[in-house]
Amino acid sequence: MMTVIGVDNGPTGSIGIINDSGPLLFKTPVKKEQNYTIKKQNITMVEVLELVELLKPYVSEKTKCYLERPMVNPFRFKSTLSAVRALQVTIDALKFLKLKPEYVDSKKWQKALLPIGIKGSKELKRASLEVGKKLFPTINFKGFKDADSLLIAEFYRRKESK
Image 1 (cartoon, rainbow, N blue to C red):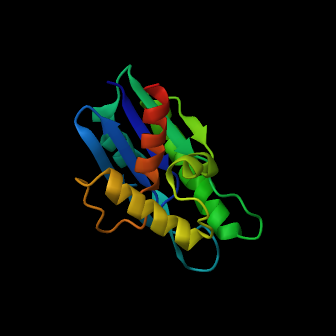
Image 2 (spheres, rainbow, N blue to C red):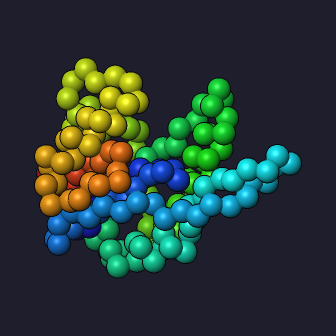
């Protein structure tokens, strides 16, 4: 069986992996750093070396990786910068592992796996977590706000197995 990796992009995202051993769920490894602006504040950044080490055991010729497109919204500038920074680091880690990700729009997997009529970010996250718990009862979801990365991996696992 192939290994399918789903990446819910961002510093608060996660990595879902489905392979012969079953499903796995990891928080994206991050670190806090001082921001580059004059005003003193911290930002959360994806830790590239930890991400490479996390993914390395699951990479083979039969590994497929699906990466959710980042949120880009000019009215949410800080969130957009954070998402784009996380995307670049994630791409760098995947390149190092010789994985070429396919980009995913959230609407595609959500339409296939989440109940009809769910609207709004909070409701989508809640629905994602509930569906994830039903599909993957062996996973401990404590500390996770959603199951997006696992659902991305599951959506494409199903698609690839057809």
